[in-house]
Length: 317
Image (cartoon, rainbow, N blue to C red):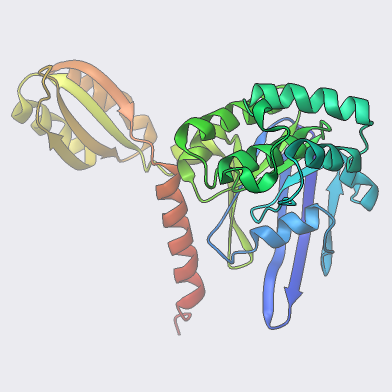
């Protein structure tokens, strides 16, 4: 798949601090791409480089098939984590001001803004001053200004910070609609549940290095360690006794209200699932058989901890 952004061996250092060390990644066109990592990992520096706010010390960023230039910024919408609006201005006037900066005519800007204000249910705030807005309302305005000029690439840094669950879901729906309409989204967050809901692919940065990249569904399968859960009706002792020689770890779970018991286990190899299922089926009535997929939160913690251990443990002599 064609990439809209390719980060090629990018490094960036500040005084006494290496923010990015030889980082590479590829952002496929028309996808939501999660840029993850602990605080201070280098995510914001990379976002600033992609936005042409700062330049890398080494490496290059390729945008839409060519080296990124200042002229490409018109095709990028950026909503930073630290946001600001002019508090004394009226909401509508300020939104128009930012829209004109993005190259829209006054007529285009007002028409599109009115549509977006209606969609996000903030039309009644058009003539209010920004200082009268709640944090969530102000963030809706900033979201609208970010997406208004239909950029090919959208970058959201913690876009749901400060939102209640209802408004967060509204924004998630709009982000997915923008993706479906052809936009590519880079999405930086610490909320791993949102990553599972929204992201097609992710890169995890830790201590200035890219330590994990991949498709979200494939990563969850890869980190499952061949763990499965089998739901059944029947004699627990007979079932467990039958499958124990075929698996590594086994964890029986008592029957629920529907009378279905469960057992969790790790396969010795992925291809063993058929043998285990056939053996279980000969000893009980099988109701469910599903892989136990880890959450992105579990993958994040495990990968970062392993990365930290590798960088702090001295080599064996």
